[in-house]
Amino acid sequence: MREIPLFPLHTVLFPGMLLPLHIFEPRYKQMVHRCVTGQEPFGVVLIEEGSEVGPGAKIFDIGTMAYITQLDQQDDGRINIATVGVDRFKIHTTTADKQAYLMGEVELYPFEQMDSPSAVSEAVRLEPALRDYLQVIAKIGEIEILLDNIPSEPDQLAFLTAIVLQAPMPDKQGLLSIPSLPELLRQERALLAREIEILKMITANPPQWVDGDVPFSPN
Image (cartoon, rainbow, N blue to C red; front, side, top):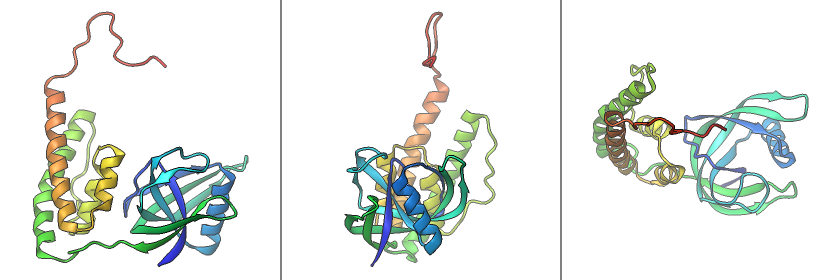
């Protein structure tokens, strides 16, 4: 168990994921100063209800520790930071310290069945599904995605899949919260299959606009 600052966001952070942040609230400037001077992480947690700005947001209890890898202090006092996700954690209790940012008593949340044969077999089944998904995304976006460096290690493959998957944040939070690595890999494969079918349907039947229609907001 350890105590770390918590940063509630409308974003799910996974281990290995890069997350740039623009810091402007005084309480989070204090948090950044604490983390940089103490060389300690803060915890990124998804907001269940409420806003990123101001107190009172309701948060989920599973998050990811983030370390600051780069800091850029602006002339107006704002701060741009680059962070990377490291370890999953589970929150046991939270308190608001005198600086008004949340502190959490947390413990690491490692995978169950991390080195099991089922994790290896599920990873073997997930990898081609991830490749298919990325190829569809590349075709739709008319971009090139390099597929040479997809990891074979089950945990790294699981986190990469969760990062690139275009899904609502509650779905991503669900993936982050799964305790078992084989189960996470299974659920990701099911989500990829669903998303691939949806994307293929969209590309096969693109929307047809008639004269006078406005397909997007002009704002």
